[in-house]
Image (tube, rainbow over all chains, first blue to last red; front, side, top):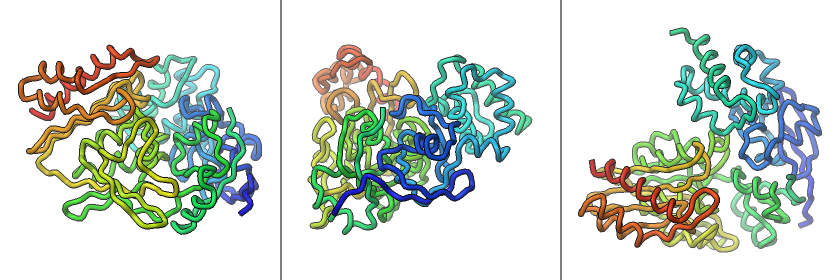
Length: 161
Length: 271
C-alpha cells in the first residue's frame, strides 16, 4: 500500500460544511488558522500544556494542538468565532471585559471555551471548582483572580441566589 | 513545534487494523486519543511513518456482569471519571480519573492509551495493579489475558507485542473493599510528583505508588508493616521505593512525599 501524507476530510465548522485535503501532520489549530482563516484559536505551547488552543469538537472542549485535523472527518468543530457569533457566551465575554480578565488576550479564547464548558456542566461552581476546572489554561498577564471573578460573576448573573 | 510528516489511516475494523500493523511493523503507531502521542509528535520525540487511528473501532465500553467490571480501551478519561458503574464497582479508578490531566485532555484521551503507554507518572497503571485487574490483549491470532502486575514492564514499556493491542481491562468487584487514590502535583492536573493507589480488601492491603520510579511500584513492606502502626509503615516504605529525582523533586523529597501520602491513605482505608 502506498502511503499518502494527505487525507481528505469533511467536517462542520461553526455550522458550515467544510471539505478539505489536509496534511496528516496538521493539527486542528493550524488547519483552522491557515486553511480557513479562523485566527481566533491560538497555538501556544503546541504540546498540550498551556490551553491557549482550547476549542470545541463534537460539543466538548479539547486541546486543538493535540487533535489532528485528519482525524476529524465527520466531526463538528466550534471555534471562538462561532461561539461569539451564536451569542452563547456573550455574557461571559462581557464579564471578562468588565472584570479586566485579560490583558494581552492570547489565552482568552481558550479561557472562554473552558469556562463555557464548566458553566454548562456546573452552573454555579465554587471558586475552588472554577480554579480546578481552569487549571489547564495558563494566563501570564492577569494572575487569574480576575478570570475567576469573571466566571463567578457570570454564574451568579445567570442563576441569582 | 510542528510534527514531522507521516501518513494517516483510520482503521475500519480489527482485521484492517491488524493487516496495517503487519504490513508496516515498527513504522506504524496506533493513534487513540492522541493526548500523549500528538504532543510527542509535535515535539518530534517520535517520527512514525504511519498513524493508524483506532478510535472508530468497536469498543466494549463499560459493562458489569454482576462480578466483573469491563472497561474498553477506547473509553475516554472524562467517561471514566463520571461513569456510575465505575464509581460503584471501582471507586479507586473513579477517584484517580479526577487527577488525569486537565478537563480538555480528559475529554479526548483514552483509558487504554494511558495503560498501553505506561508513562511512569500515569494514574491508571497503579490502579490496575492495586485492583489486581486483568488486561485483555488482542491480535490477529486471538486474545490473551495478562495480570496487570505482569503487564507493566518499566518506563513506557509493556508486554504488548508487535501487532497486538490492548482491548479492555477486567476488574473483579470487591464490595467489602475500601480504596483511596491520592496524588501530589504542583498544579492540579499536572504530572504527579508522587501518587498512591491504596486498595484494602478483607484479605489484604495493596499499596501501589506512581511517579516514584519506572512505573507502578508496589509497596509490600509498607503494607506488611501497617498493622504495627503508621510510623512502622512509613519507615518500611524505604525498602519498597527506589525514588528517582528530576526537576520536580529530589529522591529524598519524593520518599518524604510518598510517606505523607501513605499516612493519609492509611487513615482513610483503615478508618
